[in-house]
Amino acid sequence: MPSEFDLIARHFTRASPGARLGVGDDAALLAPSPGMEIAISTDMLLAGRHFLPDADAEGLGYKTLAVNLSDLAAMGARPRWALLAVALPEADEDWLAAFSHGFFALAGEHGVELVGGDTTRGPLTLCVSILGEVAPGQALTRAGARPGDAVWVSGELGGAALGLAHLRGESRLAEAEAAACVERLEQPTPRIALGQALLGIASAAIDVSDGLLADLGHILERSGVGAELRFDRLPAHPALLTRLPDPLARRCLLAGGDDYELCFTAPSERADDVLAAGRAAGVPVTRIGRIVAGPGLVLRGADGAPITFEARGYDHFAAG
Ligand code: ADP
Ligand code: MG
Image (tube, rainbow, N blue to C red; front, side):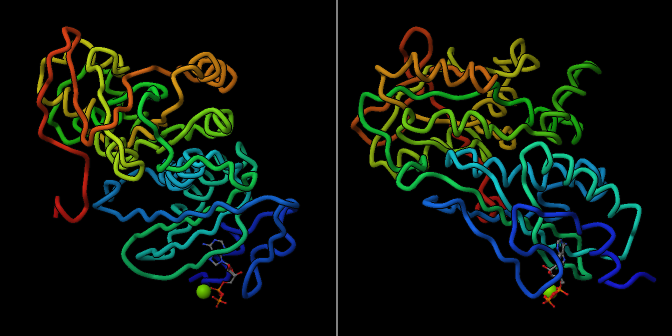
């Protein structure tokens, strides 16, 4: 039976030249680039709640880091370091090797170094803390949206939620569509380059983890504004396009979680800069509405008539 220390040494210890001291001591030592602010965030994934208990280990390693990177993307921060706390029912070396392979593959893409963590026995739980850098006062927050700003979203929405519906047997998809949607669910792309490209352009930003309406709602609340969205302009995942009259498809588009796109606002005269940021980052960005002074969120159809929609995003406590 390998010891906890064998497991850490074999699966979670890599060179970390960007840290003064990495894995192996009581704490890591980090020196941020001169003059930069640290953005730090943590996210937990529990088997049975955030992923299916039999989820592929390598995919899980990727996704555990991806959801954390997405939070840094939403702040416009450059990722630098991560900490990883793992509770495992047993010391399954094959599982750990696959998990760390997925984790380090994505970490490598973004120059993230794993500098510490904790490893313990228990129900499968994964918790990553991530640290990044951003120029002082430049970070994108949820609080900066102003009336007249345009509302934008990156990429396509609803694919991940449709993938989950497919895995649960709630939706019947063609094989290629199913594969594309499940990939959106299991391998989300954190919009790191876009977040940084939007610094100095966007007025507020959030990553879409709980659904567009819920996450934009957080911007509205923190900014003390309202919004009007155009349903017909929402960039639906291609697998949703032909299904949109269907309530499940609409729920995926408006309230489906796990897409990890960025929803952000920017002064309307910065539209060209936003489009250029999207091109530079290699991800499409779509203008979906505008910020208004009044509170609340109004969704309108192409004819301008309001569309009522009940379901909001996922709330761990409300949903039980
Ligand atoms: P302590 O007893 O001081 O908490 P641990 O024995 O838990 O230390 O961990 C030993 C070293 O290994 C520490 O540097 C810790 O940060 C690191 N570590 C433990 N688990 C992980 C992990 N899953 N990923 C990365 N580093 C880890
Ligand atoms: Mg410990």
